[in-house]
Image 1: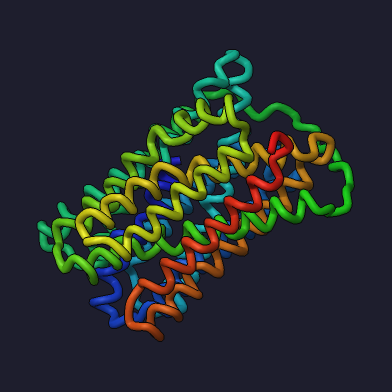
Image 2: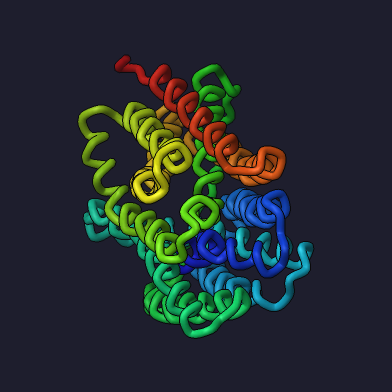
Length: 368
């Protein structure tokens, strides 16, 4: 998770300001680069549910690790917009393959050991990867690296993390035969549509700040030291987030937990552009990191609980909605930022999407 998500997927955020400055990228083109990764993730997630991947999880996991390392390092090979989008697309496909495969491998092992309580440790890898990549950027900059060197250094970090992960999977028993059953067919009724809409709005809302937070810090604070700290805050808050929200949802349920987490995240997104930079950006980083991984997990848990007999189909629908939202978020934010001259309007629109997502999730809660 640290390789595919923390570094491979989110290393773009702390490196993006350096790329925009060196390559003279406006926010619109930066948003396209970010969205290309999310397009790849959506494609990879949908392919990853097919029997081709499910029956050979270890093989696709290892291939995804290799591709994630290669695409992270390869981002520094050219400044051409089409090239950068293509590499980010492949990186997105790789991260989805790793996620789908490793969830099966890890959860099968945890279930066999009767230790599903350790699932939160697995998801903590996202925050750990974000933290490592955030700390690496200022060190590499101090060493004289430009944006190309930042990507090369991130690729080395990904490779270092990928080696033990690959070794552990290689030592594990081979893939057992997996029976891929045809999912029950359901008509997308009102609850399924509303949950899909809420999950899609969350995808839009989180992706704006997750893409541009460090860029916002550069524009608002005009302080090099604050940029890495803001992204480190995201990573550190993400590490325990799934475990903490899991405990909270034992009392209030997954849907109420999703609604509450969306409200918390909306507050952070708004604070990042409406309060004094040091306070607002730090708060924005902490609240984003403390919620976005957990909301992802809570949304899927809600989908499974909503229609247990057709869980695969409902999860596919909400995943498609989430993927669409996070594709549109950076594109719309880039356009709005270029039109308005700041990230105030894009961030407030993202916060509004999160508020609507919270209202929809709360309305769906059968305990309401």
